[in-house]
Length: 274
Image (tube, rainbow, N blue to C red; front, top):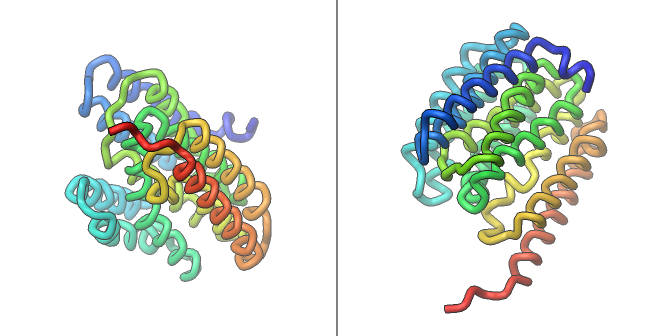
């Protein structure tokens, strides 16, 4: 953690996100505040990456395309939302991630088109918690990948926004969760190239954000606990393997068990009275 807090990318992203998110709380209300918090993450991530000199111009284009897709496809079917994210996802894993292997790009692309829409389901249920879940995922990426320049800016941007969202009233919105999840996948892709298993582990750190379609009314404690366990196991067990296949053999059962626990909890809930 010492290396993290001393890095320029983390500090710049942290200060930028803190300033923008606090300003949003002071001057905005309702949907405008929620949109401003999502914008704070994106701006702060870019500032942190620029401080580390690892901000590709294509990442800005990808984020813009993903944000537009999230807006125009909001409220539509899961398939439509996933399809709308494809152009931005392609730019994210190709032009914004040069030198990465094809299999890793494919995995990150699938993560974007699957987990970005499902994160909106979690956001609708727990709008104040969503950024805390994504922030924990970003910490998992940081502790997994061998090259942490990208992850440092992501962690710095997400932590203050997560704290502000937990402490204030926030409405569900599509841009912040969708783009943030995509940035987590991108950081895992770019930062994990030197150890293939870490790409698998980092992307698996999306945890319940990728499983949101399985549960519509999970309890907060169950959701947070499952997410925490998945992130820890994905980052500190699967993500430390050198081989991507070995990491995948560990990560897949972890995600399956997490899904079973969430679904079992959903079925165990008493139905709402008519």
